[in-house]
Every structure is written in structure tokens, then in C-alpha cells.
Length: 244
Image (cartoon, rainbow, N blue to C red; front, side, top):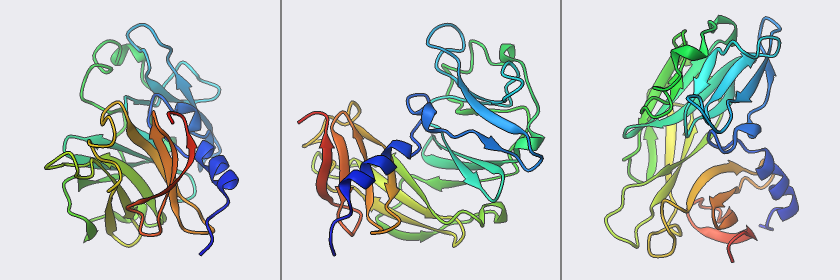
């Protein structure tokens, strides 16, 4: 099979959602079921709300409906619901919110304590549904319990750190989650090891699947953008190197 068009993949990667706060501009504004227009805002680089990302109505930018700490990603659910996934302890937490049901709160409720805390998501309204995936699953495909609210989601590619026994073991994995099927495929990244990379300073913040070739591509922060082999576990080639 021929390799996918690298120029096309680079364009797709620019649109691929990455973690808060660094990639918050990849979060798209959207319109809810009730026709309300929502947008994402960055709370600046200083002060008690520094680097927090908030969801607001376009006409009410000072009344947050949702606040996100570090390492959160947003994704669409059904026609107008909002999904959020984030690491939490030794799990990946996946949530679904109805934006029209999110109550506004005051920034004073989270100023100071939320940013340095272990909490990833703050809302005055609980999620409609949620589930968790353990991050210690072995390589391969596993059944998971997924609430019916996520049935419309075909695939989520979730980069996560991966427990290693030695410097030659994969230090990162891609969890390919199939919510509609109640499955997750664990793809350890055999090329990303502590022997080859500075794990921590260098990491995988985002990845996606090319709809034409079905190959997975992504970004390795501090190194460049990559294309994986067809098995999704091994490096095929670098699309671009930021640190040759």
C-alpha cells in the first residue's frame, strides 16, 4: 500500500485536538441542540486562573459553564453533546455533557485552588454519563463498559504514558477506543523508549487516523510529527522533524 500524502497529513495534524492548555486553540466552537453558540477561552498566563481553559456562551464570556485544567481534550458526541477525556490517576476518564444543561458559575469558585489541584474538570452540573479505562492494560484488544450516551462515537485515539520495566520498553501507548463497540485496542509505541527519547520532556500529545489510508499519525512534542506503520505500533517515518 502506498504511503498517504504527507502534506495532507500535516494539514490534518494541525486540526487534531491536543491537550489543554497548550493546544486549546484546536478546540472548536460549536452550536448546542438549543441553538446556543459556545466558545472556548484561555484565562491568561498569570494570576489565580492562569492557563485554565473555560467553556462559555459567546454572548456571556465572563460566565463559565465548564473549566478545564491540564491534559484535557474535547470531542463531539452525538449531534450536539460535548465529550471530554483526561487522565485521572491510573485511568483515562471519559465524560459526556449536555451543553444546554451546564449551569454558569463564578470564576471566584475555582480561583486559586483548582489550578494546582489534581482535579481536571470543574462544572456546576455533573456529566450525563462517564466511564474510565485503566492505563495498565496489556497490548491488544479489551472489552470495556461504555454508557449508551457514547454510542455515536466511532473512535477516539488516546495517547497515554505506559508503565515500563526497562529503558527499552515502550514508554507511551495509544489507546484506540471504540465506544460504539465497547472495545479498546492498546497499541504500545515500541519506538518511543527511554533509551531513545527524553521521556517527560518529549511525549505524544496528539494522534489521529487518516480516513483514506487508515494509518495513524501524530505529534511527538520536542521531536516532530510522525507516521506509524500499519500495525499502529511502530514508527514508519517522520513527516517533519523539529529537533533533528
